[in-house]
Amino acid sequence: MYPPDFTGAGLRIHRLYSNLRKKGVNKVYVITNSIHKTEKKTRTYDGIEIIYIGCNKYAGRQTQIGKKFLKTMFVLRIFFKTTISFLKLQSEVDIIHTVDSSWLSSLIGWYAFFVKKPLVKEIVSLGMDDPLTLQKTKLPLLKYFFLFPFHYARLVIVISPPLKDACTAYGLPADKIWCRFNPIYLDSLHEENDTNIASRYLDFSARRILWVGVIIRRKNLEFLLNAAFYLKGKIQLLIVGPHPDEEYFREITSLSETITQETNGRIKISFLGRIDDRRELVALYKNSHLFWFASHNEGLGNVVIESLLCGTPIVTLPVNNIMNYVIQNTEDGEVVNTNDPKYFADIVNTCLHTNIYHRDQIAERAKKRFNHDQIENEYVFKFHDIMRLKMTDRYPEKSL
Image 1 (spheres, rainbow, N blue to C red):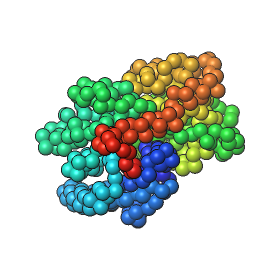
Image 2: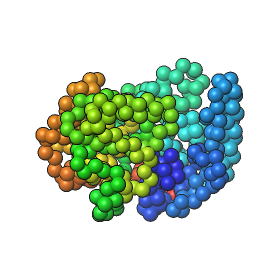
Image 3: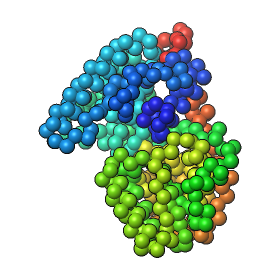
């Protein structure tokens, strides 16, 4: 979520925009939803003006008919507020950049078409954002609403090769697609005394396995916990992240209690909640022996790259083959193609107790592959290129 005091994609996008301003983009405006009902209409972070167009305060209602009605009213309200915000900004911006293929991003893509502004469309999740998936939408008008921005966009940015494959299979021309890994921003935090920062969370007598993410069904956390029954030795499982799906979280905590009971406390599971202090998060990465991952769908899996940047090896499911591009050799960990938790656990046991990993080398390889400065420079080049096509005589003042 945006703004930057949240983790995940919002934090990444904010840091990207902040650094793009240092590299020549003069002004950035962000139109987004808020997750707080009391959020102000506009806020400014690091020179970036953030315009909140609403909060879905009806998400928790129980009555189905009432819920549908209120959701419809919410969408209409957001539609009008987005339209007003966009009309106010249209003379201020040169390029429109949308992230994901949600209805809000798609709506802004249509606005770009109506006012003849260049559109850069970025998609982040295979199986949700890509045009092959959206093509399966049953209602023709809704399908056209989501797919048209792909055709209008000057540039489609994808964050992993499988997403690029989905775009080319749909029929988008290859020269319209830019495939790049996400910029990950952990460098400045690596010099901290991380052991002291994380000590309140850690059991130093156990082998420690870390998981980071939002605890929702798509993350497939139950697969990892079912594998935990077969782990050897004294183990501490560290689970970091918020849990917006309370029903799923109850299932996960119940399964965790069963694991602890059946292993007589040999396997300890610690739910740490959301950690906003990035120094603490880095400390957890660096003081874990292993990071494991099993999502059903992802665009890339930023947490996997964060772990590599901290020198922590990975054991992961393929996740639509995305992880084979991230984990390119066994020196960084293992990609395990299985649906069997026991087989997965066998690989984890080997990585924990047998394999030798050189953490400094893992981190060094990751820094070279996922260099955010290089990716940001490429963004600026792409934006310049789009503006050259629009105004060949000079570079205009760049806004986003």
